[in-house]
Structures are given as structure tokens and as C-alpha cells.
Image (cartoon, rainbow, N blue to C red; front, side):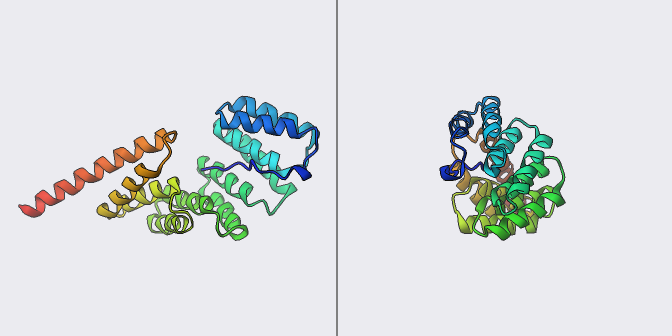
Length: 214
């Protein structure tokens, strides 16, 4: 999951850019991503060297599915502020969405180096390892994310999926049920996917129990 920075220090922002940033943030929160993008672009006309704006712009582009453009925006953010941990993590998500998993992991490594308590960076790295079918490494990262934030929905769902592929079905069911309890209602796609995996796991467990009884 990507994370935009809505808490930009106003002291470091051009006064004329600020209204456009706030408008972009409002559009983003409302899910109106094209309008948010236009607002951030307008803000950059007044404050083109603000890393946080470029980072937010990248998140909007990613949400629109334009990952090549998003990566370019994150790269500019990082040229301006190499220690922007959020931008590293966000670029990693877009690289992962582009099936560039090794590069994505390098980005998450850098994000975690800068901010070891960023649970989303750990969870995102877990997702990258999962996509590479490295389920043990994936599980380690999801567990680390949950050590930091036990309510991280991506880490809970990812943990359940990793455990399912490791055939640790009972543990997988527990993780997915926990996800269903804690995940926000607006994560509809993730909830539907988790429910389908949970149903599959329960059918597998029931079949194994029947085989054992026989």
C-alpha cells in the first residue's frame, strides 16, 4: 500500500502553493485522483523543488494505474530529498506493480534503513517477496510490520496468504479472520480476496480432517 504525506510542514512550502496542496489532498481523500493530480501540478508551478508534493503526485498517478509516470515523479522527489523514506517506499510499490520486484525490494530496503518503524515499508517488502514466491521471507516481513502495528491491514492479509502457500492453514485462517475484523470497509477488493482465500482454506482443512478420520 502506498502512503502520501498529508502533513507537510507549511513553513517549508511556498505560500501560493499551499492552497493547491490542500485542495489536492482533499481531492485525494475523496478518491478524485485526476482532480488531485491537477491540483498538485498547479502547486508545483509555485514550488517545483518540494519533494513532498512530487511524492504525493506520484501516489495519485499510481492510484490512477499510471505507474511509469508515478515512478518518474518519485524519482524527482528523491533527487530533491534522498532521505524521503515515504518516497522510497512508494516508488517500491509502483516498481512492484510493474513486476520489477528486485528493484522494488531495494527501494523498501532503503525506506526501512531510513525509518525502521515504517510498518507499511515492511509490509510492502513482504508483498514483493510474496510476488516472487519467496513465502518464508514474505512472512518474516509481514510479521515485522505487525510487530510495529498490529492493525496493518496489508500485513494481516499478506500474512494469511503467505501462510496459506506454506500450507500452515490454521494459522492462515487466524490471520485472515483477524484481517476481516480490522480492515476498513473501503478495502473492498482486499476483503473479497481475503474471504475467498479463507473459504478455500476452510474447505482444505475440512477435506484433510475427513481424510484423517477415514
